[in-house]
View (cartoon, one colour):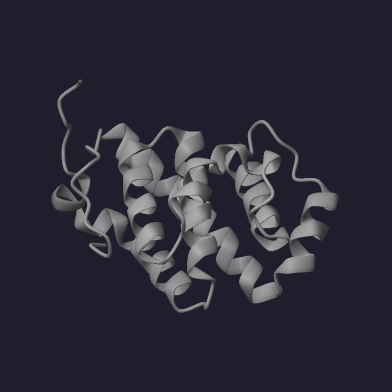
Length: 153
């Protein structure tokens, strides 16, 4: 295991103010907490961010999410216990997280719009923007997983 790198939040707290403002916006948006945590966990899986995976599984469990749904999230297309709204959010998450590899097709946009109104869609999209930013910071600076306490951030 490699040694932890610098604590970016402690060294340059002003550098993350923008991400914190996005988080504040999302928190006040009314976006369903379970969808919020599923999206953050799924993007973190894709990006290989252990710290954020640890955080968002713990926060999801604290919000009432089941272990089964978390264990099988990477295979969400293959199991029947995610709602259509959650499936739309997860598809949107994967498309935006892997934007370099994907065109964002109109069909996907229309699917997401069937389940999210305009304000929810902005909150969902900003959630994906934020988690991808946090993932990149945590991966780059090797923030160690395991010590996060639910609700800590």
